[in-house]
Image 1 (tube, rainbow, N blue to C red):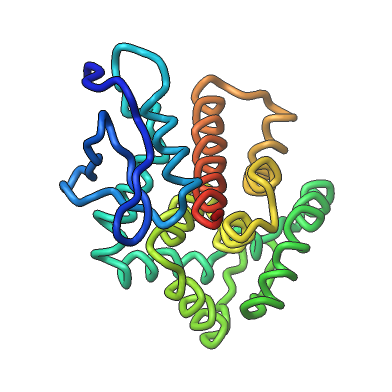
Image 2: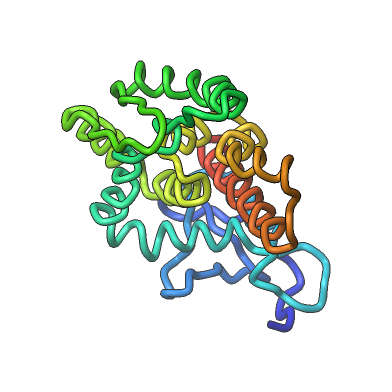
Length: 231
């Protein structure tokens, strides 16, 4: 869309902060007021809108989009979205290890086990398997993860949903959202199998684009969650 304002600024509103375009508050796609509790997040959203250019391109407004998702979708469908996220615990990437080749198995253990140990201590232990043998996770462990996810507020839940979908792992996504792992390490951990194959067979343009999109999604989720936590 063509730029229709000059100044993007932060304004206070009941419940937090909003972004003002020439003094008018922005709204979500569903026309709800876009209000966040963190001034730091509001300032970052305003910076997206204030970026130079004659046109406003949706791709350059990722924080705005994620905040809108939290308000329009997550707040209205909390139980459904929390349930979708919790399902990843039953088949989490970090619980399924290669038995061969040994080099890949060693890489997986080195990258994944510390985060699984952290999640096991903080939430509940999950069972690890090798090869293609499926494993049934304990029902009480799955319930513990479900409760933990449901306790997040709407903004954090939106970030966690975004991260889990990108990483294919609830354990890695939780570690990312809670600041236990940075986006680069999270991406590398989630992509171990693909990276291993690329080292041997090379990477085509489609795979390069897919990995770049995942890297961007992981970075966005981490940044959004960190800004939301900030004062």
